[in-house]
Amino acid sequence: LMNILQNHSLHAFGNVGEQFDPALHQAVSETETEETSADHTIAKVIQRGYKIGDSVIRPARVSVYVLKPTTL
Image (cartoon, rainbow, N blue to C red; front, side, top):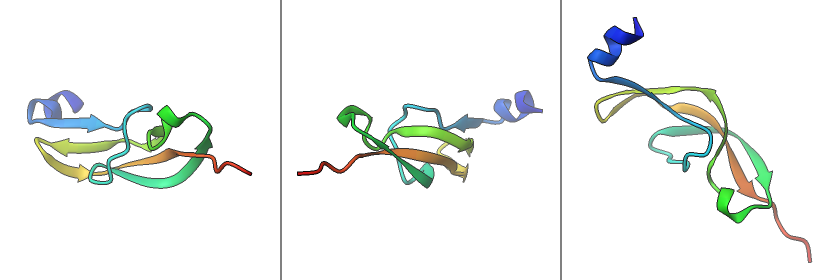
């Protein structure tokens, strides 16, 4: 079934480490990190997203890294 859908331009997206894009991803939780390079990247994929061509059929549901607040 997936091969048939891929032949009709259906593609899955949403991988750990990708930059968070609100047009493609739905953030359902946040995970704190101390690494500035990981800020606003995907920490965990809860549900893959799908699109046909450039049209999003279902956004990917993800957990996103956010910088841990620093204490003074």
